[in-house]
Length: 307
Image (cartoon, rainbow, N blue to C red; front, side):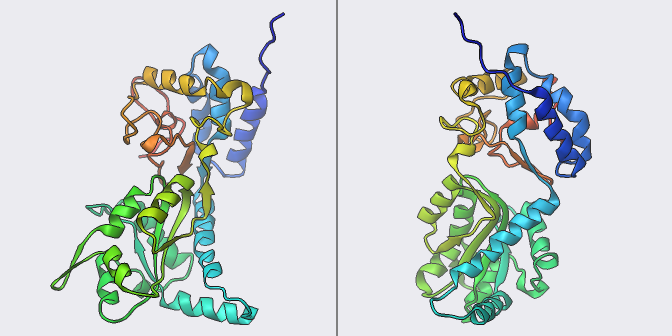
């Protein structure tokens, strides 16, 4: 006798989505996008589609700020010393906080729309750093090279592969007559303090940064293990009876939408570096997330829209 696959409760998943909307965890405009997004999928794909929807993590501005706060506050644990009193710990953290220089993780050509700009504002308005503490990469290096060593933290929304941070860390800047990178400075400066505080970071990215940038303390608001990938063999996205066919479901649906297989590039159906994540922020979706959530070509209705 054939054994039917376990049933799933579509209504329960939709009720969960409604609660996210009611509690303003998801933006209200997503309410009109849930059913059209589900309608993208064929009848035999529906169960996978509902579980994909159920796994989707959307971080509102409030949640993102709290993750960022946690990332920075976690650095206070790094300076704790055995035997120091609680008041001594608070004093040490306050002294460090007041001397920190805050800077963004930038690409080759910094852009006004870079997410780092948003997190620089959070550092000032939400965390309480002084405007004078928030500087560009080259301005931070200029301060450090003026015989004024200061602790430095790099702010960001998300670290997927860790490649962007590693490139920024090793990028040379013209500082007076010197060509200097953070990596070059840190290798010569003993006792420097460099922290990287993304709101979210994958374990893959953290390990890559630890390898490429050993002087940097990675302190994320939350660390995503490999099981958060929708294409991982042990993914927590899927129930047991769907996990084996999940990658094939995603590949076929992506092909129908026109999303290519591109070797793990930013355009790949599995997301950048094939990380296959199911996350989005209020200000944008990481390239490491599945494009199926925001795709708008070939008649595909997105779950989230960004202007």
